[in-house]
Image 1 (cartoon, rainbow, N blue to C red):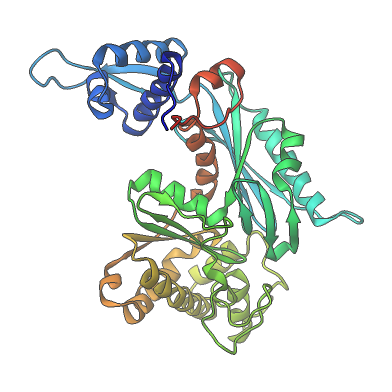
Image 2 (cartoon, rainbow, N blue to C red; image 1 turned 90 degrees about the horizontal axis):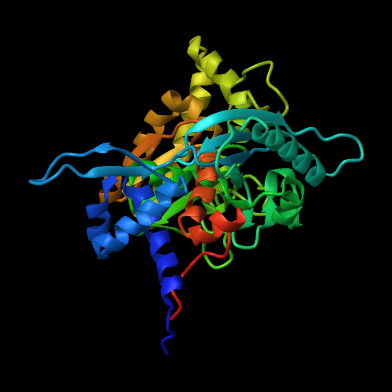
Amino acid sequence: MTTSIDSAMMRRFNKTAVFRTIYQNAPISRVDIANLLEMNKATISSIVDELIAEEFVIEIGYGESRGGRKPMLLSLNENAGYCIGIDVQITHVTVALCNLSGKIIEQHHEPIYLSDGMSVQEALLQSLIAASKKVISKAPTSKYGVIGAGVAIPGMVNSQTGYLHYLPNLEIHEWNFLESLRANLKIPIFIDNDANCGALAVQQTCHLNHLVFVNVGMGTGVGIITNGNLIHGYDGIAGEFGHTTIAAMGLKCSCGSYGCWEQYASERALLRYLQEVGAYNLPSFPSAHFIEECVLRADTGDALYIRAFQTLGQHIGIGLANVLNGLNPQIAMIGGPIVLAGNYILPDIERTVANRAVSLNRRVKVHIASPETVVHGAAQLVLRSLLLVDIESLKESGEFPTPLTLPH
C-alpha cells in the first residue's frame, strides 16, 4: 500500500536531502547536487536559496568551468550553530565545543570526584553537567546556538533508548542515563558507546565503508562500520570484543568471565605488566595521566616501561587479529588513551597481527588515531542526526524532530 505525499511534505524531504548532500560533498555546485539527487535544477536552486537565506549554507566562490559558466560552489555554514562532544572516561570527562564541520572550538577536562555519600551515578552526572555548562557558556553567538550534545560512553549502552546497561569499570548497572542528562542540560542529547563514536569519526575522515576502531582505555571495545553502516546489534551492544576470551583459564574479568581480551589489552593490563617487570613507584590504579606518565618514562629509555608497552602491544595484536579475521575491514584504527603510546605499541601490534591473522587480513593497515577521535565522534552523533531530520522543523522549533523518512 502506498500513501500519497503532499507537495509540502515532499519539499521538506527534498530540502533535507539537499542539505545532507551539501554537507557530505562540499564544495559542490547546484548542478552537481541536481545530478546526484536526480532532481531538476530549478527545484535545487529554489531549495538552495532557502538554505542560504536561513544561514545553513553559504556560497564560497566559483569552481572550474566545464565548458560553460563557472559554477558557484556551496558549503555548509559551519558557524550557523555548535554542538557538544563528550568523552566519558573512568577518571574524568572531556567536553568539546565543535562547530558544524566538527572543528573543536573549546575543550575542557573535568575530574570525576566521588564525595562521601555520593553515588557513582551522581558523581559522573555532576562532572558531566559542570564541564558541559562551562563549554556551552563559551559558545560564540550564532543563528541556532548549541543544537545538541553527543556522549561517548565506555560501556554497554542502547543508543536508541539512552539506557546504560552496564558500565563495568564504574560498576554502574541499568541506568536511564539519557533522561538524567537531558533534564539537566536542556538540550537534545545523543549517546553511544565510545568505540562506536571513534568509528564514526574515522568514517567521516576516511570515507571508508568497512573499518574497525579499537578503543583501548580502562577497558577495550570495538566500533564496527560495515557497508558504510555503524553496527549496533539487536540490543545495541555489538562490538564488545573486549569480553571475548583470549586465555581459557585466564584472569577473572569484571564481566564475570575469565581471560577476556581487555584483561590483557588495557590501561590496567599495562599497570600489571609494569608490576611484573619490577617497575617501582607505581600507582594502585591508573590515573587520568597514567599513559602520559608511562610514555615519559619510556622516552627516557627506561627498559621496563618499553618492555611493558611491547607486551601490551602484543596482546592488543592478539585480539585485533581475531577482530580482523571475523570482520575483514579495510583499515583498523587504535584509539582511546593508549594512543599517546602509539610509537611504542604499534610495531608489536603489527607483528602479532601478521603472525596471527589469516593471509588476506594481514594486509589490513593498522593506524593510531588522534587523541581527540572519540570526542569528535561524540559530536558527530549530533551532526549525523542533523542530516537525518526534517531541517525545516529544526529551523522552526530549534529542537530536533523525529528523523524524516518518506511514508511507504
